[in-house]
Image (cartoon, rainbow, N blue to C red; front, side, top):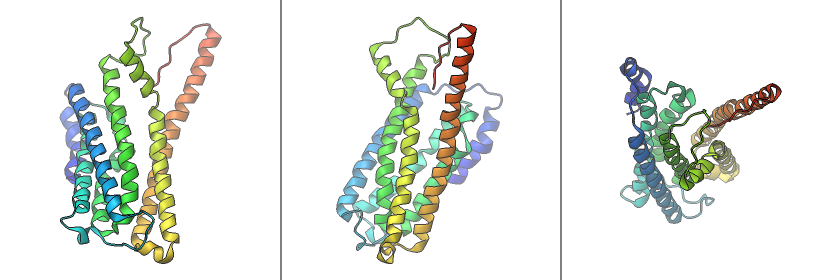
Amino acid sequence: CTLVYLGFVCLIGPWMMHNRKPYELKNIIRLYNLAMVIVSAILLKRVYGAVESLGTLVDCNKTFTMADQSGTKVYQMANFILMVRISEYFDTIFFTLRKKPNQVTFLHVFHHTFVPLYAYWILRTAPLRFNVYIILINSFIHVLMYSYYFLATFQQARGESLQPTNEKPSGLMMIVNKLLMFKKYMTQLQIMQFVSLGLYTIWAASQPNMCNVPKTYIVANFLLAFGFLSLFLHFYLNVYKSAGKTTTTTLRTTAASGTRVKDRSD
């Protein structure tokens, strides 16, 4: 699946769309985002149920792996996680079909390529307790993230434009627009989850016998946390700090010229 995904978003998709107009996928994307909110919420509930069956997340005594849980709810939960991660390939596929190459970034493609492979490896072989913590946090963030994407489709439906407009938005749209102002905080939450994963991994490594977790997984999880933390921080600083500087410069320039502009961040 991963090879097909990479082949489409890197080669076949751009070639196929080269002489075509972008597809209008607004309704499909809206339904997809809503479905992912529901699926992520179900996953969150299932992972929480797994936590209850596994006991506390800081108990290092139980060390069984997925192979020991065949046929159980925990095993079904792990398979569900893998299916959800693979279904997220559609994020990039939609970008490609809509001819949005600026959104098919290295971070985006690397994240959607690496995470399913890593999840498959670690869910199948690593001690379960070591996995559940980050999955629990990640599922919660995905509920918020896809809720944001779902709301964003309504703003796009109005025909986003930087041009001033005298049209007064409806009460619902005013609420949607206010919620969409929290975009950068979604990235901050993603950054915080990798900080949290790194700290949890350090905690596990500091326990007697490294909490009965093989060294391979300790190192892999720490590298995962550090790698994604670096990539998301780089993205955050480039997008939001640069945007802030640009806005400040624009305001100073327009103030000096005696004109006013309406600035809008998407």
